[in-house]
Image (cartoon, rainbow, N blue to C red; front, side):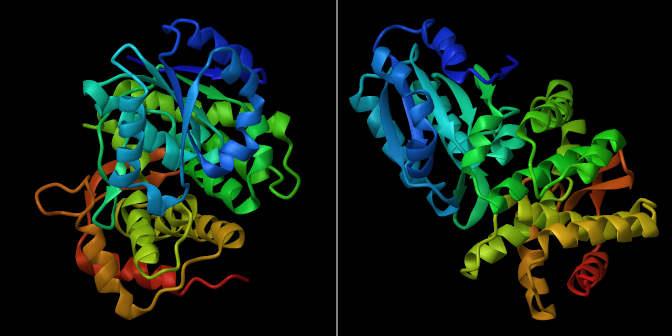
Length: 352
């Protein structure tokens, strides 16, 4: 089942149409502490009219855990939820991942919808049916594929997030442009990140969502071409886990950017991506995102984290690399020596 993606500035009206399809008292809402304060007021009148009960969990990647899922399961169980119920996930990517997993496993599966409140969630995490939680220090180690009934996207929510979280989401849009659409990459480069035009942004988000949806529709459970969406993520997830373990956490999109820098270097060495193009792209990324500082002594730990990546096959670390902007090569295994060279390139990047 494919999700219905709804772009609207009238979220409450669209949500009411969905809620009306479910029995009274069988609609529930999951949110985080920050969206509860900043975003929930936009739909509170409907919450009151439809008597929708809510559960609030603490936000942040450290709370993307089995403990938090247990809180949601306990709430649903005590509230009388069943397989004909609906769970509304209101929040960022961590929340929609976790809420989707909780709904997909409660009583072997109940319906859920996502209302993403961050840019990262709107263009990536809330779409495509991937749900999950972190486990044993590894990102998204436990999860299932399950499409939401619908995803409601409203750029008005983005006025509530800070610049760092905005850039984190923008990173996934950059990835979409690099793997599929030179035109989208060009419009992302041209967009004014200092003075965000939210009206214009909605159309650009739609372009980005279209890229994600193309891959999801052609390969729902990531057996083949959907792996293109993992560009930047093999190295990026290692950076993200490494930063978390060393108590200097980075936002997901920033980690993906650092991963794209590494994997662009691998693309030059492995799939023939242009060296000058790599320098232009990594230079621009460095200007916007900086980098996570690492030393040569950190390489072994980062490499070890990559060996746990879910995309690996037959003991090989599996990368998605670029042949050119808009052209991907999936299932690329790289030697440890090549990966070390890419780490060297990344480590020596200096902002002009």
